[in-house]
Image (cartoon, rainbow over all chains, first blue to last red; front, side, top):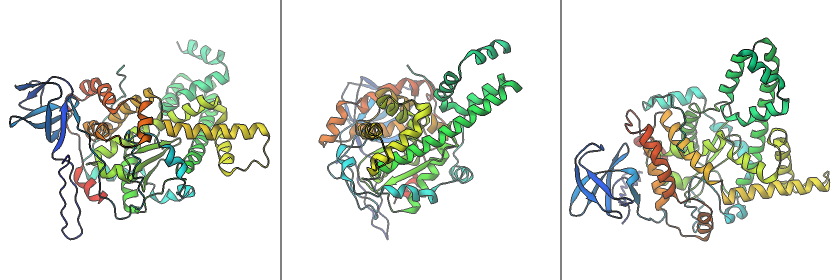
Length: 158
Length: 301
């Protein structure tokens, strides 16, 4: 069980939580820290490919559990998640599914099948103006959750 | 100093200047401000002309994007859930306010599709599947995915790739691209010469190819690092984006489409490695950022 799937059917609610119990493993030899800081005490040095169970995240750190029962903190980028299948569940209005097609790269391309399938509604693109949110509405939306703007330039890392 | 710069401006040819301006297009606003600082009255006219041209090009970019978006929607259906569409547009528009191109008409579109996918079209069209929303945990993660796709538009990655493939000149030919694409889609060549038919089909094939094979590796890496910055500018936890890429890295490769795709692209694991120096440099102490989990969970159910 890669995800802990909590199904609460209480009135109309269906809540799926992916937060707890994500399995992962270390990609480098990593120091298991006592707190989410590089300066904190090292509890144990974990070999590359040590399996861990992610309990929570705080900033760039995961609190993990590993064998023998031991909890500590690892930097996010020291870990890769274990492979998972696709997630079930969904919106009541979700009618289409690509089933076998999982473009696992996410954030980019379409598959050949998708482009050739042709069951959509190309002209629907011009009916979307009612969803456009004004800058003022967007600012109010951000303010409601305490999102604060900061000035930050792009960074060249190469 | 001022004179030197003025001479530079004067000796440079108009097309050169124009292409320079266009290549700096992503920072259009700031660039124009810089130009305005240098310029005095003499330059004002020229700047206005450039500015008009830039606006015109922007409109053409949006028209072209509209054509591409229609092609992308020949397969996919828009999710019939107005509240959710509005929610995603709110997150998106807030990110837009923290980007370099707030004046494009951005559209954020949730597709009725279970797969884990998101993509963009020129001019401000951002698509995200319902399946992606179900896999994400928080608004900050959603913001990261949207910001990645926005970055492709901000930097005109799709447009530049198409231009490269079709050998058309960006400055003068975006309008032609859009027109050709429209003709190719409708197979309406009645008033066309044979040359134009060929061009139309070339453009159409280039679009198919680009959206099947994806963008270049450096475009993806560039969009990754921009996504983290835009997300943080908007007040969202930048590490949420790392969690998203970790999720992508853990998706099971279970189709031939996935395999052929991955042969041409860097694994998500490499994308994480590439992001590491940036995260260490800029976000070693990431404080005062929000994840916004509750509103997200409420909105997508």
